[in-house]
Image (cartoon, rainbow, N blue to C red):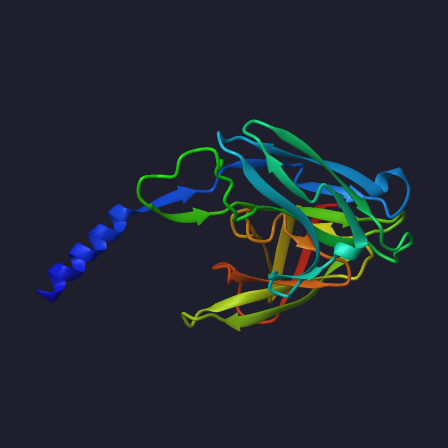
Length: 251
């Protein structure tokens, strides 16, 4: 009897709980470059409500840091930016322009990386003039968040990316992967677009296919930081010490 009762309770829960997906909105553009001073230290964004209900959106900025494996961590950066308006209530179909201004160091030594965050606020915006529902209905809110790229880039900065190391590394299945570490010792971020990567071991060279390096291509290496990528050991590459050469589209 315990199992049928448990099943019945599960069915009742699924019937009574109505999933209310997040009201969709658009946020654009997703990436912008700011100058540290002058007219280009201010940029504009648009928040668009595509739904039939009012929504609330909050816009904020966080400083962006990246670990060796690409995991990002964030620090508050509200003192370095002016955002207007930072909190918005959007009527159905409405568009709101948000202006963001850099207030920080007008002469940074290198490019600075941030995330511009636009997220739907988990608050009730039900019209109080409307009658209350006849009976309470359970709701699970699924909120929407955009995280755009924001760079403060002084004039003259440049990325300088090189391969720091290529090392064998055992994976959880007991096979050997290649850990390829890229270091950016320059003063600007680098996006590894249109990447080509060749490996050499025991005098034999292998150029990896686009599918083999798909987890590297297009990723970002921030200035002064390194990124490590794990690749399956190519079947046609001999075991042993490995060197690497690469190229990518710089602009």
